[in-house]
Image: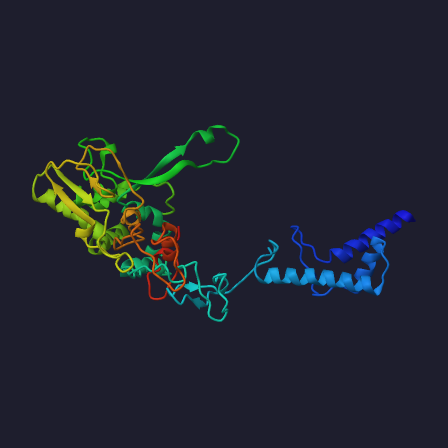
Length: 401
């Protein structure tokens, strides 16, 4: 009999003290916001205490304070919800008053006291980061990304990474760890030691008859451009193609880049020089410094991006400048601080050859926002860029993988 009483007391104790419980261990009160007095009496009985009015009032007050504190934590988002619960905030309905980014109300700054007029730090640090708007993409690229019709659009989106790779100026590289998969008995793992980086080769391929000397990457903009579409199709070696690349899409994308991309125009300038004469000592300097304000301009001209070097000029790369040699030279690593770093690797994300991040972009001065840092960080730059804004390019948001 005594054993049954102990079991009953333990059950009552759990009912009173653990009215709230979640499967993952988080504590949450039941539907009521006040403590059940009957459960409290059972709890006190289990503890062996007497149910005097004073004890009851103290216990109810203590548990209700804990309840209110928990509800406040949940309201402020500091209490984790159960994994089985779905939080749906609906569509984003707020516009950042500084940069016009489309945001959710729940993304507002923590120090924002006026809930009806929220401010946001995630997009522009409450007005400190100011960048020029991204120009809307050329009509053909817009059609490929936004059209719902099957055919060209679906083929492009299914193979978008492969299409981008055959127009890229640079290749990606890194120190891949191949030893990790030799142990056996485990799923395939791709591990990179250190960081990945971008490299650029020479203007022309080596003089050799084997397949290893076919034009690649930036060389495709200069070498044998009469057969450029065919050369680009052959340069596609990806094994992840879902469907065959469309030669018509490649041709029209090439026309689009020739017309709009300033990087492409710079390399075409070198091609024209080769075709006009038999000069051997032609090199291309990719300029790494801009004279204009990065807060207002991001569309450089061909002359601001690159300069031809003719003759036996000596000297190494200056600053972030990259000298693309004629041929028979080693691959060169591109600094991640070079303004054209992203445009050279992802020409279909930046179809105009837009400048990317560079350390010289200054922060805006805002009221009460003075700090030690004067320039935009790389994280702040890309946090600004990936936001969706009205009347601006959505290529970054709609290009999928």
